[in-house]
Image (cartoon, rainbow, N blue to C red):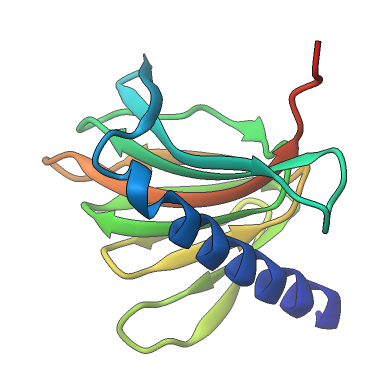
Length: 156
């Protein structure tokens, strides 16, 4: 649990750095939106980090159309997912996650086989390899901000 808390602290520090370095780019987001299964993703910031060699720190905004479902998949790196708007179902298939409820700031573990319903202000974090599914359970689009520490893109 101490390792998870330290990892979360590191992710939050890295997220703050990414946000601060991406402020000039927010008017024109980097990359092009990619849509799949009713999910649009825009990369707001991306950079390599000396803290985690071979990894890229990413800040993404994903928009889930009503009914959109990511499908169960493993996380390629640790993630902090913040719900900006809308309502999401988050299911852990394998592994575990930690949700922080925005209204109370209380945290709760999410075990394999469990689903939580997320609303604006809620946050969920999980490590590399956690198999999970994210789906829009509302009638309007749902938007997330996600900080990720994914394997880096090899240079050519």
